[in-house]
Image (cartoon, rainbow, N blue to C red; front, side, top):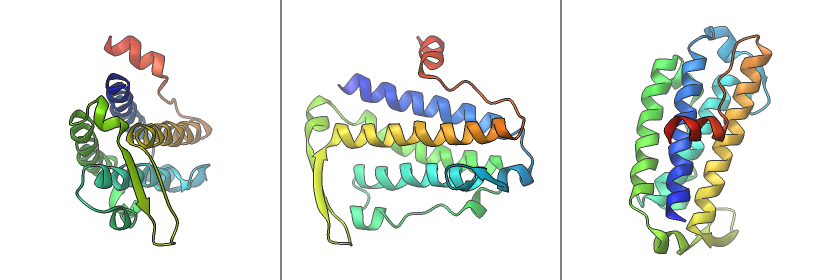
Amino acid sequence: MFELIKTCYAYNSWAAARLLDALENLSPEELQSAGCSGHGSILETLAHFMSAQWRWFSWFDGSMPVSKALALRIPKESLDTIGKARQRWAQIDKQATDAVNGLNDDKLRDVWAWSLPSGSSDSLPLWRLLMHVANHGTHTRAQIVAAIRRLGHDAPNLDFLAFSLTVR
């Protein structure tokens, strides 16, 4: 199970880097225009993708309780250039990679419980939470790729098979 989780997050890193490369070809107006099915604009959806991973891994790595991690947000304005987005993503990606590399099969089976400010609570094994975050990243990147294509630009192939054939 540990190898699967490590592979999912290696793919996540690879796909995000390719997506950021593709975003270099868009104008600031295209990055900020409405039309991304995720969160309005490509930039807003990118900020959401990065914020979500940052929130989850700030809880997973023990740096903050879930209630504080939920409040973390990256404002789209802080990603006004792809260079700034790359810098911010590098920090988030390192946080995730370090956390994942510190795991093992036993830790992945640990059940994580949470209580939200709304009063709801639940629990799941860590591996399921990690798979949720990885799947969310795939879904959100796909929304951005679709928006890039709607703007008439080439978008990268972010398929897991392309990753697998690249990194053998």
